[in-house]
Amino acid sequence: MRPWYKRLDWPTILAWAALVGVGLTAIYSSTHGPAREFLLDSVKDNANKQAMWAGISFGVMVTIFLMPARFLIRMAPVAYVFCLGLLVAALVFGREINGAKSWLQFGGASLQVAELAKVGTVLAVAAFLSRTNVRSVQAGLNSGYIAAIGGLAVIILVPTALVILQNDTGTGLVFLAMGFFVVFWSGLVSLPLVGLAAASGVAVYLAIVNPWYLAIFALLASAGYMLWTRSKLLTGLAFAATAGIGSIANFVLYSYLQPHQVSRLVAFTDPQKYASTAGYHVIQSKAAIGSGGLFGKGITQGTQTQLAYIPEQSTDFVFTIIGEELGFVGTAFILIVFSFLILRLVSLGQEAASAAPRLFIAGVTGIFLTHILINVGMTIGLMPVIGIPLPFVSYGGSALLANTTMLAIALTLHARHDEFAVYRTG
Image (tube, rainbow, N blue to C red; front, side, top):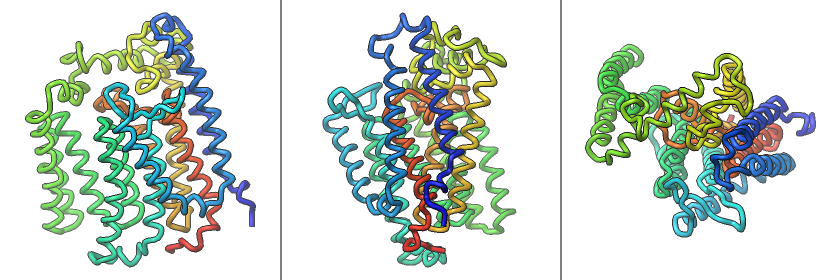
């Protein structure tokens, strides 16, 4: 049998290094070019701080590679409880940044505990379901099925609620998306029901974009379910999941939210209408990416970047730096590497013969994919601006450390898959 270190997926590690390298380059450009004169002193050192966090993250990755895989799963309850403790501590003692009270200060370092909580939560989900006889609960509604779904819901919803209470709704949505991917991959819910959950998400999005699009989608989804399932019950559920949930979302949006909250959610649909407020980010972001052309303007040469037109550029809007200064080639490279990373993780998950690595990889894939779609989508005007960083690329030590930790655990569980005979579910 090959030793575990020869089974490490080196292409995935190279993809991690490429993304971190591009991120460091973009952060350096936004803090060492002409833009430097517009920045606070605390921001001018972001490139060095991110490089330090990259080194720490690499050290954590190597350390995790040396850990037994079964130890990682056994430690899941401890990690989960510890992460919940951090979330509660942030609510009580945390530091508020950009409206979210999700930071804890440890000496000279600040940690965004919501990012770290993803690690403990996805570990707990994988450990819980790996000890559940999935085959026995897939047959239908029984006590085992209810226990599995109920336990999974509790594990995910508790940290989600704590994160939302910190006023970090974007990160809270990531926890829910992770749960969706794990449920789909585990087979606990049938494909038509998974489709209903996905359709309800699309309906909420269309309720923000245009109610007429929602109406058309509801009719098409209902007709599609009738042709697919031949079930009146599922067809009715499809209509409820689209027209019903979409209408509720539209009602809540315009009847209960404050005007400034509404503008943040809908500004991407017509940024010029909100040009002086929430639409400003979208206008400047699209201008930066569109002006990059094929090869970009060059590092530290982007007009929008170096004149500091785009707020939070090295964090949530780092993709605009790449688009403006590295052009289409740079953005295409990033998207290709991300696509490779996601597809590679899917492949590793499919290769796993045991529940623990398979479900953990499913959760990590869901987290990464959600971050990528929302972050890139909001920079090009397809998604609301909700403050979600680009994995491995955006500035932020907590996010880089958490994402690297999840990736390292996924690779370790895959490389040491032979340790999971006790968790095998077939």
